[in-house]
Image (tube, rainbow, N blue to C red; front, side, top):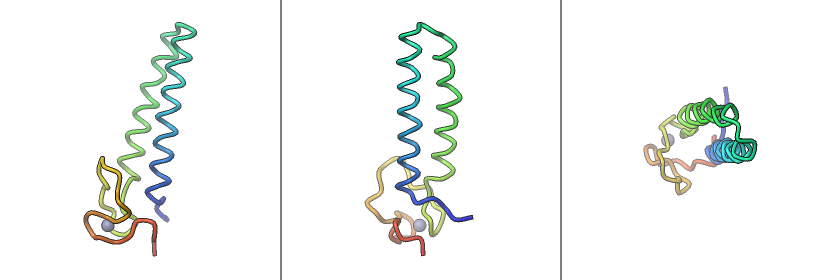
Length: 83
Ligand SMILES: [Zn+2]
């Protein structure tokens, strides 16, 4: 299976985070505890997705919490180039 490029993984992670913020705002507007609790599984999915897929397409190293500068900190290969 082809790995997702790290920048796409980051965008999906950001989208999941934005969905949590929106859900929390909706929960606040509706004063709904159920909607607020729905954020928890979304947060778990986001974290698992991030840790599973935010990896170097060459060596599979986790890219860490910092934004990569375009190169893998372990193997040194360019992250945007999956060849
Ligand atoms: Zn690497």
